[in-house]
Amino acid sequence: MIDEKKLKKILDNIAETPFQIREKADYFLSEEFIEKKAIENGIPIPSRNVSFRPKLEDIEAAKEIVYEVSGFSFYFKNKKSALELQELLTKLSSSIVNLDYDYYHGDSNHKFIKIAREDDYGRLGTKTGYPQHEYDLIADKLKRNKEITEAFDKAKKDYEDKNEDYSELSNAIKEFVSEQADTAYRWASLSEKYARYYEVLEPEEAMKAFIGIEKPEHLFIEWLKDNQTDSLEGCGVEQ
Image (cartoon, rainbow, N blue to C red; front, side, top):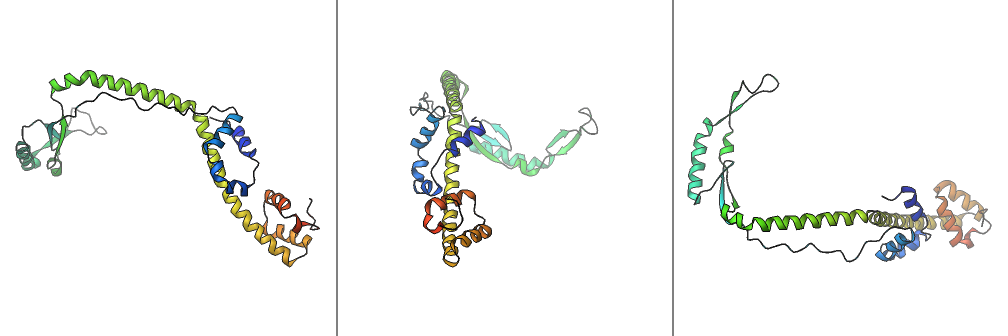
């Protein structure tokens, strides 16, 4: 993680005005600019040749259907058997119970009969799976795919960790550019207001009134001095 003071210094050293940053936002948000700032400040830049996820061995999807009846799994040969069991369990639902106990009052040696909810025994669904002999045939492939995936994920995480500082710098610059664009819009509004003060009052009084009423930040006054010197002459503001 980049030291907070270092990050602030990097952003403070971007000397362009909010208007310049707003006008050239595409450049200040570009990888070219971010990489330039990273290199200038000793922050490693990421490689552009990141390997793609490796190709895994093809494994045929499971086809055997397992019926989920009221939360239990059954390997029936057809759906009719599953429907018959579902119907039977639904009829018996009022008699289906669980044995439970209250830990607060006692222990597992003293259980009470808990009636099952009827809607727990009216559900029917399906999943797929492999017969054991088919699973045995693909077990080695599954193991290799798992090892390859874990190795890739570890390498990816190591890569991302090494580039954490760059990502942090990138995010900070993007946020900074957004803030500068907002500042540019605010300064444009203040500049237009100052021109109206200048039209009504003498230069010195215009600036005093403007500062007293609008309370612009110091950086804006500095920008105004550099960019509207004609309207500031004789107004009492240091040039």
